Every structure is written in C-alpha cells, then in structure tokens.
Amino acid sequence: MTSHLQEHNHATPGVAPVTQDQMRQFDELGYVAVDGILDPEQDLQPLCDDYAATLDALAQEWHAQGKLADTFEGLQFGERLTRIIATSGLSWSQPFDISLPQVNVRPDTPIHCTPAMFALLRHPRLLDAVEQFVGPEIYSNPIQHTRIKPPERLVPKEHSGFLMVRVGWHQDQGVALPEQDEVNILTVWLPVTDATVENGCLSVVPGSHRDGLTAHCPGTGPDGGLQIPAKLITRQTLPVPVPRGSVLFLHKRTIHSSLANVSDGIRWSFDLRYQPSGQPTGRPAFPGFVARSRRNPDSELHDWRAWRQLWLDARARLAVNENPMFNRWSNDAPACA
Ligand SMILES: O=C(O)CCC(=O)C(=O)O
Ligand SMILES: [Fe+2]
Image (tube, rainbow, N blue to C red; front, side):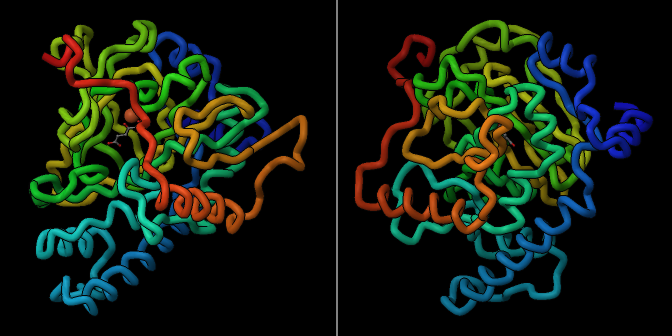
C-alpha cells in the first residue's frame, strides 16, 4: 500500500490491480486492502452528487409531510444528514440502500438504483480486480448495501439501527442461505469517506477464513442483526482503516465487524459482492446480473434501467408474497445460550 504502488496501479491500464503479494495476503489472512483502484474524483464524486440529490428530494418530501421541521438546505451532505437524524430521528437507510430489506417489503419500498450506482457495480478496474479473485465470468451478487452512518450517539435507540450503526462479529457466509456455501463469493467493501478507527472502519479476525463457519445468533448484534458470540472469537482482532479510493476485499468466511462511529462526521461505505456466474447467490429472491463475461460478452448487463427493473420486479413479487428467510440460525442453539 505504498504511494509507489498506487501510482503504478493508476498509471498502467492492463496491469492487474492486485499484486501477487496482495493475493498471497488474501489467501493467508482472508482480507486485503488495495490502494488506487478507484479515482475519488472520477469514480466517487458522481455518487456523492447522486446521493446529495436523493437526500434533497427526501428532505423536501419529509418536510412537506410535516415530519421534518427544517430541510437544512444549503448544508454540506454529511452535516445535513447529521442534522436531520439529530432533530427528527428519520432514517435514510432504505432510500439510500441498493438492496431490498429482508422483511416487510412493500410495493413502494424505496431502493437506490441509479446510473451512478450501476456504473460503480460495473466499474472496469474494480472488475479487473474482482476477476483476479473469482475468475472471468463475474456475477454481481445481490447482497449489497450502502451504509451512511452518522455519529452513533445521534442515532435514536428506538429506530432500526440496521445500516446506521456498527455491526457485530459475523461471517458474510453466515448471512446467506446454505445454497451458497460452496460458492466463491467475494466481499468488496469500499469507503466513500476515509474509513478510520474513529469513524468506524471494519475490524477483522486475520486468518479466520480458514476456521470454517462459526455459529451466529440472530438479533444479538448492535444493529439488531446476527452476531457471533464473543466467546467464540478466539483469535486476535485487527482494525483496518481504508482511505477513499481504496478497496477492501474480504473472504466470505473472514470474521469481521465494524467499529462505532465516535467521530462528528459521517462514515460512508458500499459493500458489494461478486461471484462466478451460474451459481447460487444465497438470496434467490433478490436479482443479480452478469457484470462481466469473457466467454459471452453479450450476456453482460449494460443498461442501468434494466438493472433497476430487476429490483422493481423482485419488489413487486415480495410485496405480495411471504418474505423468505435468508439465514439458517436459531437463538435456541447452544452457542447462543
Ligand atoms: O460497513 C460495515 O459496517 C459492515 C460491512 C460488512 O459487514 C460487510 O460489508 O460485509
Ligand atoms: Fe459483513
């Protein structure tokens, strides 16, 4: 992660973004942060503008509905969000998210499927890196989220903490159905704001991807989600700060959590997942798409509207059907006692 490497990576199209040493680290430790994959100005700023417009529309709507006394127009994005949650407790997690919720999907549940978001999912250099881990037939797995977290002390306890606060120890394999247990799903975690120990970067358990799947206990995490009981975390843990523009790759069995945002600003990240095409995703009710195919380029999805429509169709189906369970864990398990 030297500046030499960053320059080298940016300057040389066609050169693999992840070095052999970094690939080795991933194999040995189950995670690696790679600098210089995204260009903050070119690749992340359009997303910032996109989300600022969404926030503006939301603020106007909430204001018109009498839920928000002030729209805080003119404030910079993070400050505006922070003021909104501090004064109203209103949560933006679902309208900003790039997935549907796991329960209570309604016909009008918002989801953030936009051209800028789709451009990130198909970003060529990001896919070059992903190709090094999952091979040339790349499928965008629908387990993905936008997390824009305010200072944690401002998030009202009575509101759903999901996507707004820190997450407990877990393995990504544990939050999807057993159908994906043998599938090589790669977690691609990237910060839009520098992720630091203070504002709640991820923490990992290096080497834990080699230990197999550990028991998770539903409803016990700080965000109301699954969590591995503390007594089962036996190895050393390590915070992994990641700067804007860099990408953290995680093996699906690497145990990780996030730290609380104890700063005064927001902590913003996207977590995306990719896998070889033609294999189960672990959330069959949600839509993925072919992001890259060397064998059959015609099968790639290039149209952001078609991507959005896949989600809208899934939403329409889920709104009238019982929402499926996406995990295998029960609180009755001995590990959860
Ligand atoms: O960003 C976070 O706080 C948690 C992310 C996470 O667990 C993941 O991307 O798999
Ligand atoms: Fe995770």
